[in-house]
Image (cartoon, protein in one colour):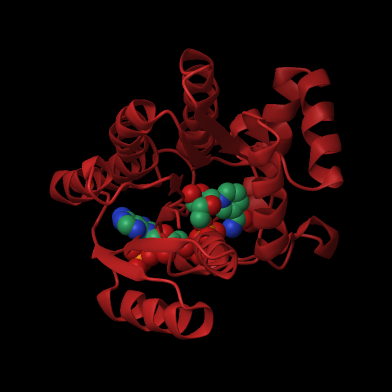
Length: 257
Ligand SMILES: NC(=O)c1ccc[n+]([C@@H]2O[C@H](COP(=O)([O-])OP(=O)(O)OC[C@H]3O[C@@H](n4cnc5c(N)ncnc54)[C@H](OP(=O)(O)O)[C@@H]3O)[C@@H](O)[C@H]2O)c1
């Protein structure tokens, strides 16, 4: 029996990882801030799939929260075989509209927590000679898109770099870069989504299925869905200035309302 720890496990992509990994027979450590939601989810997954689901309440915007999860990842008696760094959020508005405290909170959750938790997990995984880390970035990593895109670019670059550093140790790392996924993300940020065309939306369960296939194939970067593979390929060919204009205009549409 293997154990997976998922941050941001109560909603959206994290909950889809929890459902899929529980169905595959993995024990789980579920991390988020909402204690009640975590407990309901743990009971449901235990009852449905007969797996053990631990609850770890932690705010990954705080030093205490990050350290609590890192300590669980360092536990050698109950090792974690797969870490999914998924917790994240968006801030509504463009640069200077967003309070600096919220920008910094985003960097703590998206970057500092991912750095510290990846290190804690990878160290014990390397000792055992096996393990996996999936860091959830975004296709926003490939376009100029404010602090959110910059933080996700860091996640993608960091993860692929560490995957190379740890090659041959048995520890696999993969950055997952989805496009728009139907979750609580936009609603929580107060962002309207009416102007996002239907064809751009992905299903969280399908994103997770493709991510786990890519991880098993040893990929260090996963971009689920052919539509987004094509879009990110095109983004690399377009001039930076043009991309910047497009993402800035689109932000005006489905960013602040
Ligand atoms: N949805 C998209 O279109 C999309 C696209 C590309 C990438 N992503 C990325 O995918 C990841 C998951 O997003 P989602 O769309 O699934 O969002 P979501 O439905 O809003 O879920 C976010 C999860 O993260 C947890 N969380 C948020 N802040 C946290 C904190 N400070 N400490 C601990 N847990 C925290 C939330 O639980 P609590 O509130 O209980 O803490 C929740 O479980 C994020 O990293 C996001 O950037 C999303």
